Image 1 (cartoon, rainbow, N blue to C red):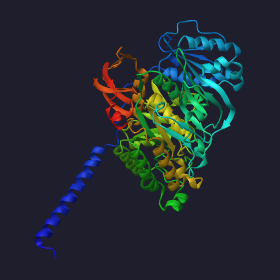
Image 2 (image 1 turned 30 degrees about the horizontal axis):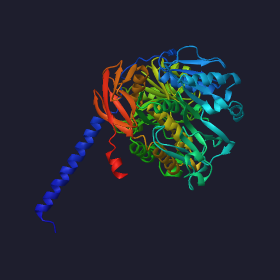
Image 3 (image 1 turned 120 degrees about the vertical axis):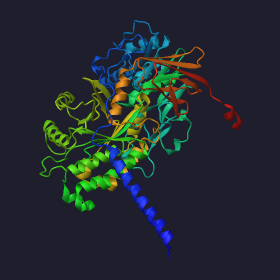
Image 4 (image 1 turned 180 degrees about the vertical axis):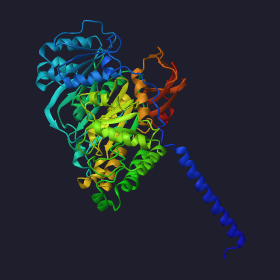
Length: 599
């Protein structure tokens, strides 16, 4: 039996809890302020990508070959790293000084007889050679000097089939990775090119990636497996070779960066330091496809999007330490007679604000409607319902970029970031008319080995990633794979697997991503290593704006940093943050005492 005193105490506690609940809820709603976009672009000026014209004077790159795919990715890498690029004619060497050149990139598949002397001469000067594609086995057999230059002692087999690949630690960020199907892995995981020549290399070669012939070779010495990426130490310098098709796509960006950072004892370069999770075609605010949604989930469409889909996205976002970005639309099917709900819009905008996410516009639609008409319908609704919310980003999908930019200029919104579907015909990041353009680095809900390798490469080169997924299939599912349970399992598993080694890069909203890319593209910097190799001095053209650098010092560690901060990403790799025009990083040799103790 409860005494009067205890009853009074319990009653008071209940009143206090109720009061605190009401106050907390009221404060939460008051502080949410979801009708305003908390992210404002910090700058509006950036040079157009097309205007980039860098000289060969410092770190310039030469290209010898005919592959347009290889050349396009090399141009992109040179643009990000502010390097001049000069294309060589077959049989014609570079007549200038090699002192300030960074590398000679070779399309080995297009080499001619008269290119042999050009390659040998370039190697003798100490210039780093990068074979982005391999010469044919026939060419190597006829031009043994070129084979020797690449560290190839013999051709074991002109074509062999692999069961997987092994990326070793220390080349790309993200650590070691084995790209081989497990017993329970679906077959679509393995989408890499598994047919390559098998070379036997000289002992002065360092292999960064090799192939497995079968499971018996998994624990074999690296010299008995087909090499895929390696470096050969010549008398005067280094020769790198890529025995696969990696240099025709985004993975080339990270490989070129890894080449530069592995040939130096101390390497430092700028990165963006931004990662975001983007959901297109979500949320929407109209009751549509009601019959199927009700049959599958026993609720209406907006309630389904609120109570079932939202927790899935938040779980993935939170687990991977990402800020979500949502490209919203009033509806997916613009032929639907139902109108959007103001209540649903307000509710979702409050959820987005509480998650530190950001909403952007979208030109994409499930139904057949022009981008101009769709945008007009959406903006009329948004401006009437959210008068003070400003959109700074827009998803344009696979729309023509010139037409999309022209259309967005008529909206009255200050669009600073445009997100498009990835295309091999354009850069991953670009700038035009003071607008930053980006493509997603990871799209769709499915994992594959190529996606994993590509993400490692892009993170290595840029410290940037954007994982994108289209949520329209959740409202209009065409197969059981789009049912929420299956979607959630695939989507969460994919993002969790891809990003498990990149949690230290900073989560950014859509506009924050645009701000950091703008700072990255505008950055002019110099990094000097002291003669004693005990300090690195970074000078930049900015003050007050955050700038980020990757510092790779495999045999050393940071002792002190002035005017900046640092964080160790992995062994011997640091992320340096500075807002100063000059930052000094003092280094020291790694403490080997514990290592010696346990030997």
